[in-house]
Amino acid sequence: MIQHKNQLSARLLHALAPWRDASTWRIAFSGGLDSTVLLHLLADLAQHHPLPALTAIHIHHGLQAAADAWPTHCQAVCDALCVPLQVVRVRVQSGASLERAARDARYAAFAEVTQANELLLTAQHRDDQAETLLFRLLRGAGVRGLSAIPEQRPLGLGHLLRPLLDVSRAELEAYASEHQLSWIEDPSNDDRQFSRNYLRHRVFPVLTERWPQAVTTIARSAAHLSEAQGLLDELAEMDLANACTTSEFDWLGLPSLALAPLETLSMARQRNALSHWLCARTLLPDSDHWSGWQTLRDASGDARPIWRLGNGELHRAGGRVWWLSGSWLRAAEPVPIWTDPASVLLLPDNGQLRLSGQVPEGPLHVRYRQGGEVMHLPGRGHRDLKRLLNENGLPLFARGRLPLVYRDEQLLAVANLPGLDASAHECWQLHWQPPWSDQGLS
Image (cartoon, rainbow, N blue to C red):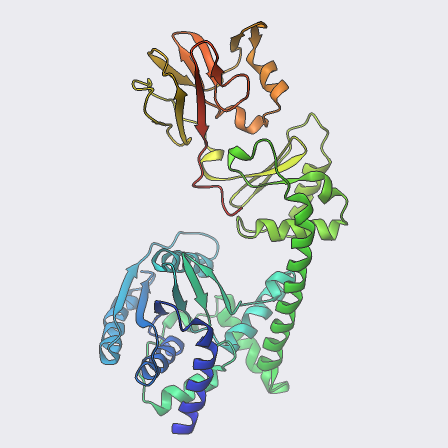
């Protein structure tokens, strides 16, 4: 017993060695077998090694009556091990896949609590890895999906680590038995209507009867595919380096890529580069929906192609593709009178506006384009705003959110556009900071 414990503890300590400088290790504690073993191992290691502070977090999904008793059980286990426990209740959105919705809710809660320099530890193991690869293979996943469960990734402001991916379920069961641990048996784990349960109870027993090392070899394949995905990511970074050029409209705060460098790549490399660029922003499309990229790429110059994806849209404008999400996809709300132009004006769902220089006399009104606007320019007379915006080249998707400042019915300035954003006579300039909260990673 002691030998088995020491072996498993040593492997866990080795896996966690690069993360010893974290301020806190949070254990995702469902109360089931896997997380109970992980929590017990870590609590024991903390008695013999200087480790970061340990805490546990239990997510209550509220999906079944039996789950109401689980926080009490988890609290008792944590109290016995002297590990603080946080219980978080989440709401699982209804949808086609209850498994996926519960997972999304759970990881959203994990991301919210994981702070800078903190590590969240989950107890997925080698059997989970093999089940995930087979499940995704049956769904037609590509190399990224078949890489299965990553060992670590960013989460919230910190990181997520799965230190037991090289440990089998049998080893965890043996450890739990040796240490007489008690854990929760989730009734839903026996429900064969869930795909993973079907694989676990019906498919893998048949596979392992014929190939006893099936779980180990399938998990090994996941590791090979993860390495292959790493190489594809490196290729994507090389291809994206040529497309990540600056734009005169970088002040929009939106991720964008130059289209011309992408068009020189083969279709496979285009998909690879875009997948790498989009994966942090949205769910990636399946093979059938990549035709949306070709439509966007090949549209005529005067077209307004849009490729709609799970969490946003890809637009094409000015020889670039632009990622829009969040507030950028909602209509800008009306703006109240700017009663104090010397102060910053918060625009509902549209960033903020400020003036520099000599503050003009008011009252000033902020509006958005409706069509037909005319602006007087010194030396040029009255000019149609649509034509002025065309001359400037501002992407069409931004024009409806561009703040226009009026005094009475006179259009005084258009934010951020050279030649239109200032009054030489009154010595002031209009500055707009677009919304940044939904822009995603750059």
